[in-house]
Length: 305
Image (cartoon, rainbow, N blue to C red; front, side, top):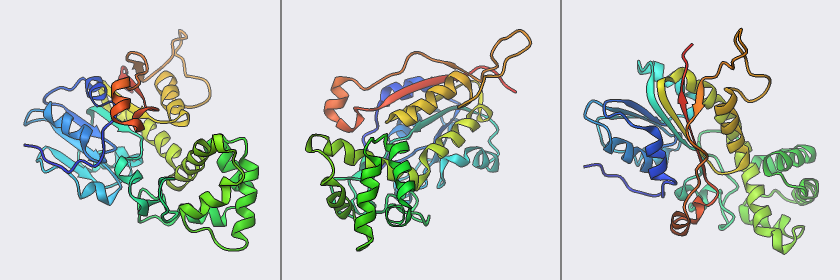
């Protein structure tokens, strides 16, 4: 019997497991283990010969790992997917699942600083061992760099005004907590836009702290080499910046520039899209409001180098 302490409601759980099209004796990768919800369902569909490799850089996720001899837990960022597969003599896998969301457990831990709902340290590090934190960014980045950060990762029109007011306050005293940051910026935000703007400020900081978009790019670039022909890639994203990357990579096998074509003009693509983008049902959103922005995309490996 598989046991684990559930501290996160897995989003689009049935859809993502179905999307993997699991073979009972296959090898699968859950690159965002979190609370283990997706991993548990994958293991249920595997035979004793099946295998699951789970990645997570968060030490709290490691403490919650499943006690099952079919699972190999790797405490690392999933941008190093191929490195660790090779280190463990795994050549190809049959499916890869990635849920790019912040877990409910992380959001509900005020000490982590991910949420606007609690007054906690300006941290936001997925990996507590790294040096860069949200406090470092808020207090040390130039006004121009903060402006660009809020514009690029938060898509905020008021980026410059927000950066400038932060600059004024930090010149008097460092901004060290989420509550202090909210007090600094909320005066410049119309009340009807307050929650949305705060969420985008926090999103910008979290992306920068953890280099989330670069990590997703690095990960996606490795998936064609990791997957066997017919293997499935299943990705769940939560905002347009993430989803745009996944959509482009499935469609073009790259993020920019022209797609390579063969002598006959056919595109040389590693994946084919499986179905259309999927979103949570009304029932799931009612049970878990944090799932409301989720988008699931599925692709299948169609050609090998």
